Length: 295
Image (cartoon, rainbow, N blue to C red; front, side):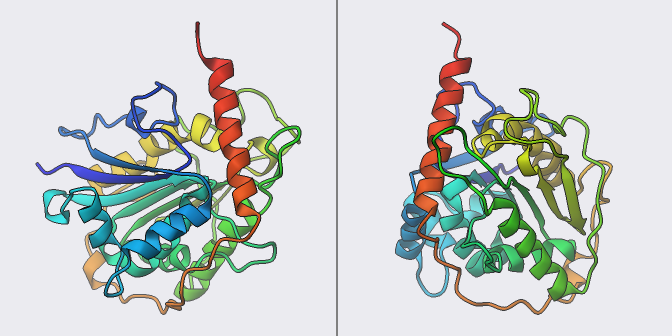
């Protein structure tokens, strides 16, 4: 059995450096007889990741050069999926726009940012339409508020995720509906509401899921408190069975679905405030790790 390849990007450390949930290697991969291969692409600021995407772009694609850079070949894997956090959207959006056909699934943790009033992300919308049609899996978590005292807010996360979702709905003519959260995925903040009362709002169509935590989570909490459980509930079973338990059944006709009409515009550049947002997220990650580390 060939392993799955998971490409993770964002201001996070490589799996195994610290046993915290933010390390995607901590997800429950027990449904697989072979552990996945994980490429971790670290860095700060979405402009850093956008520059990587630009440097790897050749003949209208990014993925082949990305894999070659890390000494991998697509033929060595059963599937290629994306996951990551925050600034990773600088790479994720153009990658999904140009190489969606070769990517099986994507699960992003508060990793959708635009200027306020933006129209979401073109790559997310394109891949999301394919997910709505049952050909891919896309999961976005989001928040819409603060990062902590003295830190700038990540205040377009929810707006960007929901705008991308709406573009995918419009392209496919489908309707939004809530869904029941899979067992094990947090619906409240175990450390208490940081900066406001609210409830988790869910949105989905087909295999495109949005978990909007609103004011319940700081930006950095998405990687530290949510990522392990969300990956275990959505990505792992989907890669193993083609379904998300309790939410979907395996699709048998993926290749026979007519593709949606998605605008293939260039991926949107990151806004000027993204570097501050990502810096805030990184500081939050480090603060959480320092507070929870045992002597």
